[in-house]
Image (cartoon, rainbow over all chains, first blue to last red; front, side, top):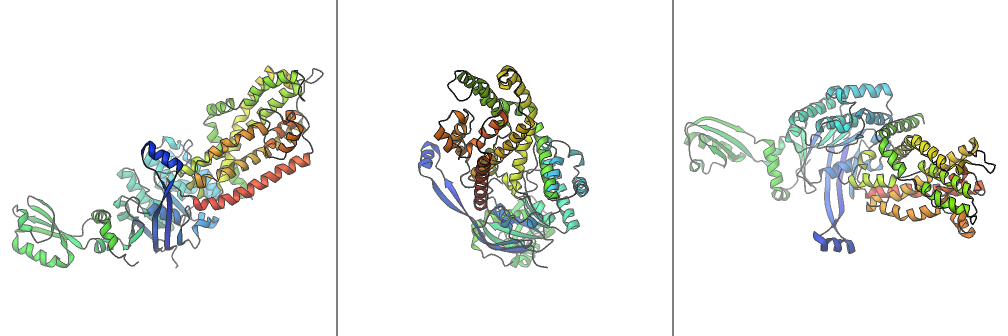
Length: 336
Length: 270
């Protein structure tokens, strides 16, 4: 089966007006406007197979949302090609619009002063669903999201989490094949986040939909995605499995040691980076290539009661990748 | 076609429900658009002087008709569209498989429907205050007949369509320069004076009136108001031709700007 999303050399440049602060800056801006070219996305290439749930990671301003806007046809690329469900998104063909959705956390399509059900009536008509089908789908989606009791309240009266769930129902009413989700759990409490994650997993399982998901909550990514794309400064840094991120960006393992008696830092010298040392517990980050050697030294030189070796948490690795952006930028991008 | 009719029907119903949430606001919007009723007094006095082509009663009828026509042909799409572009709220609308213009048209038409009872009430009050507006030469009632009302209704709907196309074409500029509504305020000047809103075209010098009749402005207010109030509007074919011509021109311009403008849309804020 061919990929449902193909992106090749995708590039987007923006012109942004620059203004110095203060009155002088405002006057200068009024008489002579200066523009700066912003390279939001720089020639990225990837493909997504039907049914995949792909995490799209990157720090703020990395270009994630711009890519999603281009994939959904909102923004025209400066260069490169995009095809979604075998169509060019920017052409805004009806067949494509009928098969995709874009959900942006914090942005809404629902009519603020009316119950969500009224907005669903518009969506059902626009997506050419008959009344019975629309009613069945609204009921099913509302049930999955535990929203049945809230659909007749004005949207402005809903909590943030309820609004996000109501937005998801609107976005999925036409059973899109491709979902672009931009921070769908933004600002929600942990329970609401968990509900939405479970819902998305269930939706994909039952419909075979494809998802490209951005989120700053790693729990969203780890719960839903087997594959991730990492973008930074508009460049795709990584495209591969979630587990593979450790190998690419964290060529070390975490060694947790429980000791018979407290030690000082000097006794761990040369064994790896000391992540923590509190009383009889120590954590070391050890280069994978030296792991056997270090474990042998620890066992030989220290009174160890317990020792575990694990990959560092993915949140920690991703945070490190973004923090060390310059270092990562120097590294060659991974092959897809 | 049936699917499209259903889309429009639902859009109108939901937008009407939305408008009903703001009954008080609608009444205030009507109150701030009573300029024709303000003009009514001075022009009636001027008509009584005998120095103008219309007499006191004709001026009264005309301005009451202008008030009614204007209530059902107002257009604010440029302010709505500008807000959507600047805030990025246009994005969700672009993702739906229907041209966003239909949503705005439904919003306008729904508001006209929600205005109707208020407009009727205010018109009755004004007529009670200025009975000259419905008084014939012989002192009896002079009310527009069903034919005149039907023609005026069609002309008012056409006036709204033309005004919408004019303003929506201009709105497309928001895709380039965002704050486009300033240009609408600029064109309010010719709109005010050439549409017949502050003075009927009959009081213009003959040669000026002939030129003005080739612009779109008189067909936004004067033409439907004159049909409702009764009076000479010139050859109907010319009026219909000019309205259709301008409507077509603005539609072509709007579609062209829409296609080009979307390339500039940055979906900022969304």
